[in-house]
Amino acid sequence: MQTDIKPAKILRSPFFIAMWLTLFLVEIIKGALLVAVLPVYMDNILGLSAGVIGVAFALQYLGDNLFRAPSGWAAERIGFRATMVTALICTLIAVIMILFLKSAVGLSMACLILGIGTSPLWPCAMTGVTAMSGPQNKNGTAMGALEMAALGGTGLGPVGMNWLLERTDHDYRTIFLVLMGCAILVILVAMILPGRVVAQGEQATGAGDAREDRMSANQKYPAKPNLLTPFIRLQQSVKRTLHRVRSTLNVNPLVYPALFMQSFVIGLLSPVITLYTRTDLNISPNLYSLLLIAGGGITVIALLPVGKMVDKFGTKPFLNIGFLMAAASLFVFSIVTAIPVVFGIVMLVGVSYAMILPAWNAFVATLIPEGERGAIWGFFLTLQGSGMVFGPIVSGLLWDHISHPAPFIASALVMAGLFVVHFVLARKPYRTASAG
Image (cartoon, rainbow, N blue to C red; front, side, top):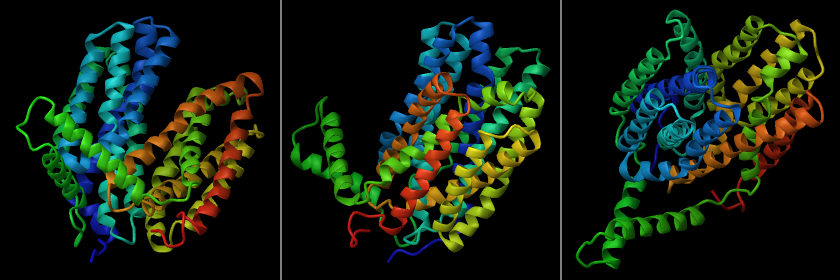
């Protein structure tokens, strides 16, 4: 019989501490490179076009998104430590390439490798936390803490690099050397991750599945090994995994558009929020920084207490309130111009996201069957991340061809749609009443 580990114990576990630090440090590197360093470096220093920069960034996201499912699958077979260390070495290689390569092709390849290197982060984190939380899935506290690490690193990276750029008189070589040091540090942290996380009383399903895969391949191909044997075994393992995923994943089909919509909203907002505040609201750069601190800061501060309340009261009230509050706030944001009101609206959006993020991840965790957690988490996160691909494209079209407030109105409508979809999912999360 599987038993639960209390949420507080999850936060104190060696796996969670190592995973939290790994996530925090990697997001510092990503945030520094993608927000503060690479756009200016590639434009002002190397003289590359905006189109080249866009392609490079798109490749980074493509690598991150496409390799999430395979990395989740690999984590359950070769272990969290080996998966993360191998991937993070790719991150270090990417930073080294950025330091020495100056061409558009070289930097684009570096961004692709950077994305591949960061792809196992969330699948490993979600799989491990879900495994430890037990059948009751009381992991809202842990999910909130993970989101704190991600948001904190994403914010600290650009701020720290901008400060360092000013102190070094824009010496980018020093910047890249510091980021290389961060990459080496995060590899060392990942080395203390356990091979596999098993909740008390749980059978080692992933490890057992891996052994079963090898036994099946050996039985089918008992002849002496040759050069094709590893590929044959890999093919058999993938086939068995896909079969188990199809047989164990029995969720309501509305889960899939909900996963897409959750990140599609962020994709709608991310390309235009800075333009809108500068051009339409006439907010200065310094005031805009305060606006980001007000919204992002309240999100980070509220994540952990909201996560604890999610464990106590469940995900439903927080998601219902969060989706409705976000929808209303984003709609109002598109029509107000008074700066004090704008600050208040941004803080409300921050509170709503603090309610949504840990509750949503905890809700999705309840849909993950014990078998093939890593592969299914990777699949879900890939689908969820795909919204970030299409969101900016739609946002740009709305901005150019309809109006500047249009992306914010669209994001409000998507949030309202998420409220409706979640309302249905909360009543019937599985295909059949007997599933789960």
